[in-house]
Amino acid sequence: MLEATGITVRYGGRTALEAASLTIRPGEVTGLAGPSGCGKSTLARVMAMMLRPDAGTLTVDGVPVTGWRQRAPRDLRTRVALIYQQPRLAVDPRLRLAEVIGEPLAANGRPDGERVAELAALTGLTGELLTRWPHEVSDGQLQRACVARALTLEPRYLVCDEMTTMLDASTQAHLVAVVNAYRERTGAGVLAISHDPLLLDRWADGVVDFAGGQGPTPGQPGRALRST
Image 1 (tube, rainbow, N blue to C red):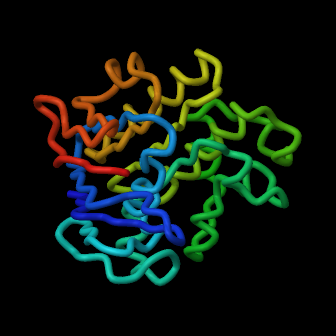
Image 2: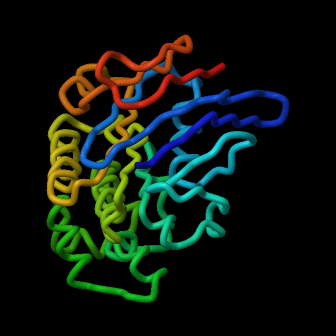
């Protein structure tokens, strides 16, 4: 399991997240809803080991996380992949789309062109699109590359932070289908963060409402959440 317990994050004198807890189980999609500014993205970054909390613990398959970002053990860091809301802020503009997808493989010293091509085709990117720079493609095409990149190392958990925001309906449906197919094939756990209740109703096994300090809805496997 990917388990956050009592997570508190402060930015300067402001508390962005207070004593938040959530568990993501393998093979399940946990939805996370709530208004802007309630701490959803902050929790997502903590659960992806991208942000060190001021208090609380994160465990990955029973192993406590003691290092954050590049200091997190590679074995733990590669078990969790984060897909951001804004793909243009999540990619290096100096990389072509094929390089964006293959970036985790290159960083781990095992570039694999066949794997890149396979994932690109899976997400609907083929041919000359892979040779384009980020500024030469649409937001939807760039987000497809980001989803493909997230799958390259076959993570055990996917944290999808507003992954489908501002995408057209067909792209949204396709990317959700890609993530679902990956989950069904590998047994990965998924955290789906969204403002869209209809999307979460269709996609998630249970939904945690982050508004007003509310806990999980009936049947939700996560623990209660509190935010300020």
